Image (cartoon, rainbow, N blue to C red):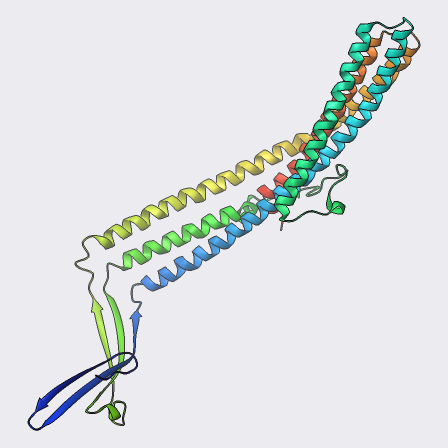
Length: 360
């Protein structure tokens, strides 16, 4: 037996008084297909577009991660403010409770007033415990998103005074900005890849023409297996007719067309989703400033009413119930203003996300 690079065969036979050994070896068999009908070209384009789609999916994940991190940071900032408001309210309610208890001991206030004052004080205490828990959970969420423990100097102490992202949008912003959304771009690349796959499936109905180059040798002895004069080089075309494929090519073409239709539907849905998300964010953006202004005015008026009710109560003009109601109204107004500020800043983050990562 003999062998060679790429494979070899050997045979021995006795003829007359001697033995004749025949060895053969094939070296480096390669094939090239002539892309007459675009099958290889379309397959190459499909793979390239699939790569582009995967890259856009990575960009979409990055934008989502940034948005989620910003939202978690703002939520923690709002909870920090909520804790501070609850502590301030606890001190104010505690003073009111002490004053009511002193008045009850000297027979000026009733037991009902004492119990009413204590209910508001206990509510503030409960809100402090709840806000403390939320802050700890917010920090856990930030650590999870960051993949590490976020240092204290990076954690928020309170809500920012200004919107953390886009302050003002340019006028007459073209809807073409939505084409930069990663999900829309990925759907577009998938659609192009599906169309290319249709071309490749259609080209499979035509014959494949390839050129095969073979390098071999034939020798009468192992020592002369690759000796001088033994080389042979041949170039032979081969044609494969896709006649008896039992419907495989037809099925592949139908599958490619169905995939293209699915990718087209996905592309249309991505664009529609982009328009809806941007429209929703802009709708909120168009009214949030008015709502914030109204909530600020409500908080200021509630604070003024509380101060006046305290003075009138201590002067003996108004009953204690007026003071208690004004305290509760102020606390509710402060919480509502804080929630509105969080909505404003979260809307800015949502607008950043819905535009595919802001304006580039």
